[in-house]
Image (cartoon, rainbow, N blue to C red; front, side, top):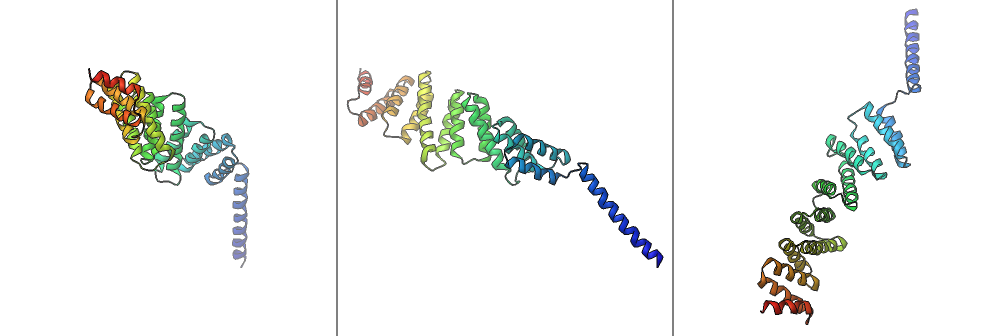
Length: 261
């Protein structure tokens, strides 16, 4: 009987010791990845991004496989407009869990934001790299093709720029993005023509007039590009289209007179 009581008493004392030790560990700061993750989320929601980043980095110190911590770190850097760090963290999340919740949307947002920032600051190589990777994640996004096309134009890569604008237009839909894609074709044609690259100018302007067949400027510049490239017959047709849109246009008539000589 005494032995049974002693055993029960020992068991109770042992349990109390375990609870006491656990409480002491918690008081000494022995945290779990889940508890630190929760603290980081609260800081993120409060837009205290630097503090949140420190918490999520601590999560990774405790458990390097916690891909969601990388997602939140990327979101914090997106909130700070720190695109290089956002992309790096989002890429790590994608490498660990490509099909994880919010991994692709966060990675895509970081790449798109970084691409727009690079494009705005004329860092065309960086912009191209970001948008190309973005389009691997979002291959049907017309805005991605529009922006990579602008970046290729900025870099003077006319072939890739033309291809990007055309692929963007094949995604369907209308609205401002489609208008910008069509305008990108005109910009590319005018830029190439100004730089004396008539062959590439023809490619842009032929595609442009196909999508906007009522634009006088498109046909006039297409005619000039064809003229400079030596294709006088097609140039004649382009200037005739310009006259159809605006009978008596002096620029078109002047080229037609020269063609007749």
